[in-house]
Length: 337
Image 1 (cartoon, one colour):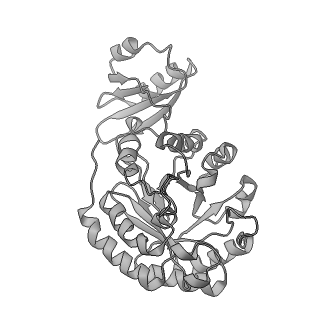
Image 2 (cartoon, one colour; image 1 turned 90 degrees about the horizontal axis):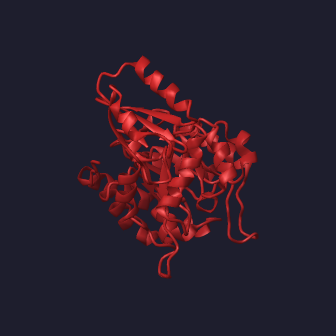
Image 3 (cartoon, one colour; image 1 turned 180 degrees about the horizontal axis):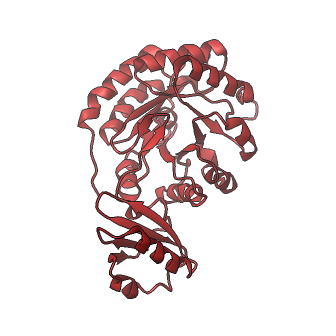
């Protein structure tokens, strides 16, 4: 349920209304816009008298929400969320490219790639230290040593770090990580999502391989219910019957997500498609469709990459992609809901 308050409502009146609602075991989420304040009611609102709420002097309108996600619901918020990562903003008209190798393999590799992608227009560095792999015999990442190398690359370039967490017990190792990525296979690892909700870290939440948009948003709800509102959604392709691409990139998710939630959405065409020659055209398409950013895999020697070499771009290819994306960006779709 959403309660729209009249313009000019005083803070004391809002607190009185919150106290009354909390007395009925109803949680509240306050969203302050430029002209109105919205109170989102979280919990069992079946016993709340809508007519009584509407009759209050400070209330302009009351609306029931059918979607199961409440904190992540656009109806609770007047404006898009702008996530600030050390001064680098994503969402609300702010567009960023996250780029780097699938996995950290050596100091030389991550430092070289970080410098090249920054020069080409990326503002955040991605790199896997802990890697979820389908085969137990595949390269699993460098672990904490990989995190140390990412921190070194951050010191060299000033770029905030985006890297994936595999287990909540690793959280202490991520103290200096700027954006914690939840991979597709962990999207419904609800116990880990609860732990991430207790942190103040920015969370990049990837969509699961076979999950609906509503299930994706419910995973974001788990994090937000714990108090952490700093979430970036990432569309990375879903599993369909098509075999010519690694997954099927669902660009239709962009306008749907924009309508349903205030959270920013970035697109990862590298994991979605699995082949480097497809990455640039779909990155351009995602940008034109109104994505708030891109996540692109870049390796200085894809042929010898220990992880996902076929989908990785060379630094030169990334430079061309970046130019094309920023040329399209002024004409990107804009959504008003």
